[in-house]
Image 1: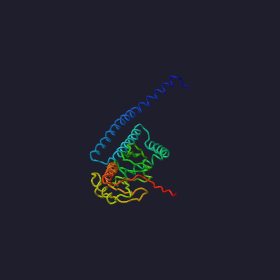
Image 2: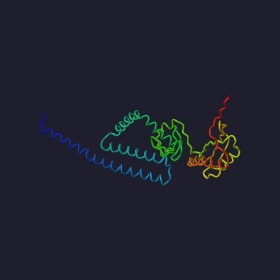
Image 3: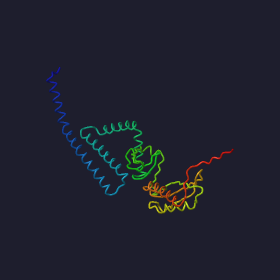
Image 4: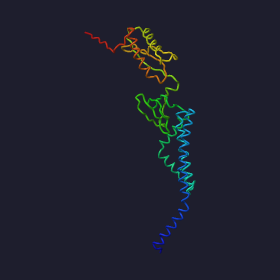
Length: 274
């Protein structure tokens, strides 16, 4: 049996042998990893700046930079592992098995990733556009790998999974460059309908954010219980939607009052038989 001194000597010899064999490789691998990460970060930063200078799409730029960054880092890690002595084929096989396991556990996340790729390829919407999906209305602020970030009319931040967005209807209010504002104004049955239409058309024609083409429209939409309802339909740029919405309601009411056209209160006539 080996005594303690012999065991210590054997361990020491083994440690020296391992250090002499793997020490230089390990030091070199650490240097390559450190320098490689610096180069990758510098490269991706340069690519991002060049894409900004050449006015690449703001929707696509963050996605591409992220893929380049993580792709290069994965290649660097595999290269460093092979320098230390890890079999590259075995390492890739382990990564593949781990990726399969993670993929099965994160099916929803992968669906959102695939949704993000499809959104960037087919462009149902872009950054800065007003959209509605899953009963959420808002301006697209950012398209991330897994989520789309919206800002709703109340200035709240809405985070929507990309997979869920593609699985539902998408209404893009900005894509056509103009949007119709749907308003309804009621006038009394005693009022002059033609005069009311002329007044409201004049209000819309004088508004600087109402488009001339398509031309504003006013028509009778309903003969209600207490009023004749007029459909008021101006068109505007999507960015001016709420300005036109509130202005036309206010200015239309004031103009109708000025011209003696009344907007009736709801009323009910009751007849009593003796």
